[in-house]
Amino acid sequence: MSNKLNNKWFTLVELMVAILVFTIWFLSAYLLLFQAVNSSLYSKNEIIAANIAREQIELVKNIRDSNFLKYNNWDKVDNFLTSWVWTFWSIWYFTIENNFSNLNNPIKINVLPADFVPTKEKILNNPKVELCIDSSSRYVHCEPWLARTQFYSFVKVSPLNSKNILNSPISVTDWYLVESVVINSQKWYREFKINTIITNWRK
Image (cartoon, rainbow, N blue to C red; front, top):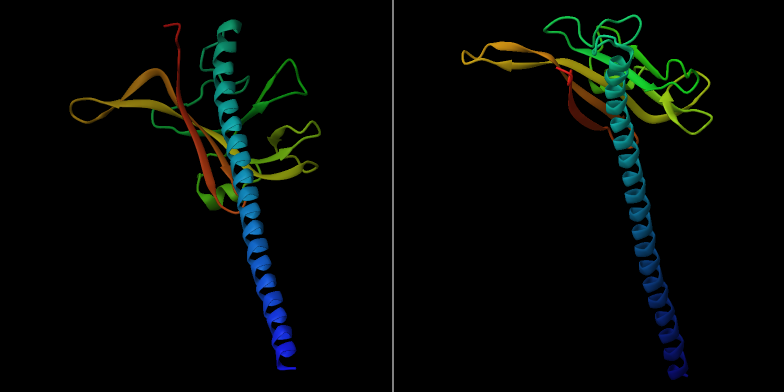
């Protein structure tokens, strides 16, 4: 009788150990899968941010090169603005993107307000730099009817400055420092930046 009872208890202990082992295995597999999905999402967002940042740099260069073809001043921004920057000390912020709805004006560029400050709070609360997805699944700056994303983007343009032997700033004419900034705000706040210099290479 006691031998049968011991066998029953032994079977119960075996079952509990098996359940414990299965639970540990299942949780490990779940955590591994969860980590893989998070890593995949992180990589996807990094690729998207990098591509948007590169596209903005290329659009700035495209404006410069189009000006050469149209015999405009090389640093003319559009029909309303004369130059990327207006004074030696000025720093200006723009949104820039392809304009697929107007082939005569293929690049859409907007000047952000002069009081724009690129801090986390200002960026996340500024709909002008927020990116949405249009009907063709392209990232564009938001309109009220478009689906919002977790990305924000803008371009910072400033004069390229150097210093003389007295450590005083001097202007480098016909050169601008361009910084393309893309922010991913999903689960974390991450800024992706690319810098380049544009110049009047015809001189």
